[in-house]
Image (cartoon, rainbow, N blue to C red; front, side, top):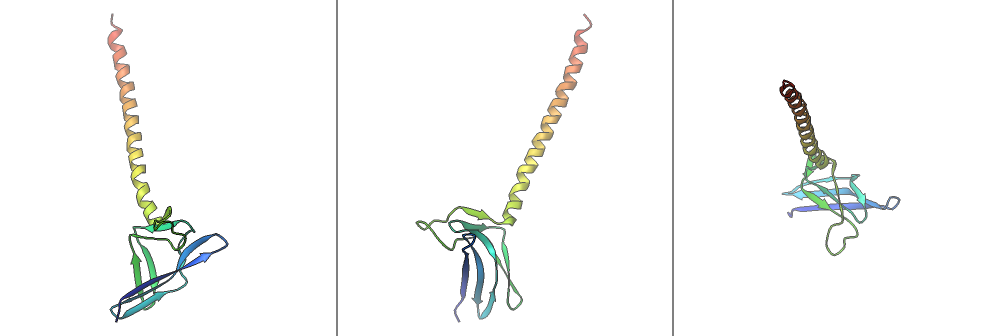
Length: 130
């Protein structure tokens, strides 16, 4: 028995977009499929990219996780993917780090301003004794 994996895309002509609608997998004689999916809806000339993983519930109580994938169904120019739309799981991971760095820098600026004001007040008292 041959191992097989196939994906079917559907085009939404109203929105000029496409999405993953059907997945079929056969591995070591275990076959599973998933119908009526709407995964990765993007514009026609764009691609869909997800590193964190897309969970696909399949038949026979099988869940398939597609990690580090990028796909584009239609209008591939010169064998290169179009502009990638990132999945939600990847966006959440990338936002936390810049927010943490921004908060740390903001806190550091506030500490420097307070230290400057305290130091300035102490300097005035030293020169008044003349």
